Image (cartoon, rainbow, N blue to C red; front, side, top):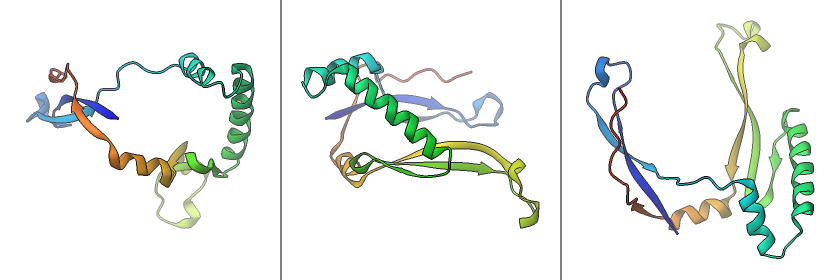
Amino acid sequence: MTVKFKIVPKGHPGVVGGGVVKYYAAIDRGDKVDFRDLLTEIEELNVVHPGVFIAVLEAFLRKANHHLINGRAVDLGQLGTLYPSISSSPADSADEVTRNNIRRFKIVYRPSALLQQGLDHVKFEKSSNGNHEEPAA
C-alpha cells in the first residue's frame, strides 16, 4: 500500500507575517470513508449481516465508554488499547492539586504491535496534486 502526501507550507508561530516559511510533507487523506461505506465493504465479505454488525458495534461503544469514563483502559486485543488520559495545570505542592487542576479528559489510542508492524512497510508517494498550498495569511 502507498500513502500519498502533499506539501504544506508553515510559517513561524508568533512571528508577524509568519517569518520564514518552511515546507512539510503531510498525508493527503483524500475522501473520508464513512460508516455506511465501511459497512457495505464488510457486508461484501459475507462475514456478518449489517444489522448484527451495527448492534454489536453499538454495544461495544456503550460498554467501552462505560469503562473509559471510570478510568479503566480497554484492551482491544490485536487492534490495540484505548486509555483514558487527563491533562492538568501544575500546582506548587501536592496538597494544592484538586479536580479543578484537571483541564481535559480524553481517550488515547495505542495500536497493537501487530498493527504497528504494518507501518514498517508503508511506501510514500507525492500525490498528483502534490503542489504546495499557499501559506496561510
